[in-house]
Image (tube, rainbow, N blue to C red; front, side):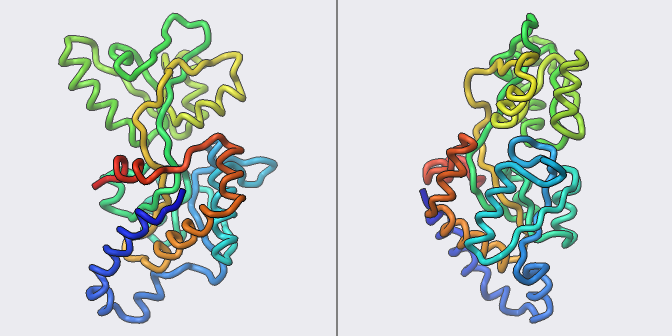
Length: 280
């Protein structure tokens, strides 16, 4: 699989804005380049196993390894800056790091304020307490129940819409949503019976099962709300964006890339996925 389809479209957009970009001063262009020579400084909320988490006080997980491999083919070193989810986009726009590398879903709203580069296909799963009477399989089963989620995630808006357009429209009780700063805190809230179920990324749900599988189950049986994961780049920082796109093209052709996807049982986006899931 290659990123040539999306890359071609991105190149066309870059050409279209080239005339405007030409009027920028040298100092402005330099300010929007990589922060440090030979490095890629990435912001990440390192609390989201198995994408990014701390292992022996060191960043670990798929996204961490992915960026390390990508940086290598780009001739750079990856540097991970741990920060909480709500600070990622403000930190990027404020110049704290070159990019966001935090299993961030690509949405139309996010693309209004930052550029995003797809690198993975994902979606959600539902977790429930093992042995409980409530085992929701689809979001429609949330009507009249209390559901936990990490704050700031893209599926919250979808659940809020579902609560009004489906639950209340069908004469059912609305969905009660409780948000927590991190995903592990959401799981703990479910285990403490503060919420009845948890919705989270499908890979994260599998990771929860690996850790506390004797207490929780994945109650859903299909991928919910399929979506693309993407790197975030500050708008106007074409040097970083174009370098990452070119690097992804090279990295996707290496044995290390295939091995990493296989190791985590993750799925690279196909050309069809990019057409269907990339916000227009």
